[in-house]
Length: 192
Image 1 (cartoon, rainbow, N blue to C red):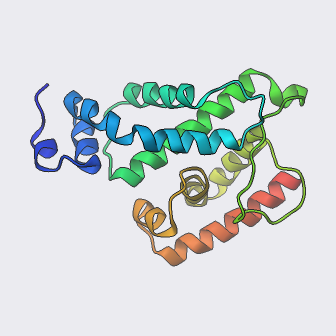
Image 2: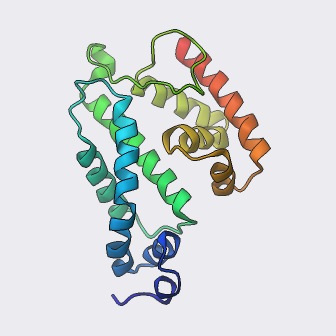
């Protein structure tokens, strides 16, 4: 497919994402090298939170994200922050699916651990495993989907308050309130 007018006019990440979302396969070829380093950085962040015996490697996680992104139907990408938010959500899903398939939760031994960053460090209790965190986030999503999105964007995708507000189209104050509530709610849910 020839390069779309959108990609020709705006060849940056956002322009290429939008062109790819409209079916321009050439835009995807141009986009991949532009986002690869950031996806690797995001994957390394995820995997650093995992147990040392976690068998997935950074490149494997990034490749799995690429495969899932390519398999998705055409998406209306808002911008690069939206792309990385979706990528982070996919990484969370991949690691959770992997943990479930390996029966980590059922057997307990070797459970994948998620380390909370200093913004979430509220308790000295052991870190929750990714399956328990995923279950808690799914429960929170049933109660308030936006608060779950805030956690995914801030904690998993590493977006700033400003970027998160842009993606969700709400004020920064709303993001801060949601973030504070979600951290408290998750701490309580994971300590039970």
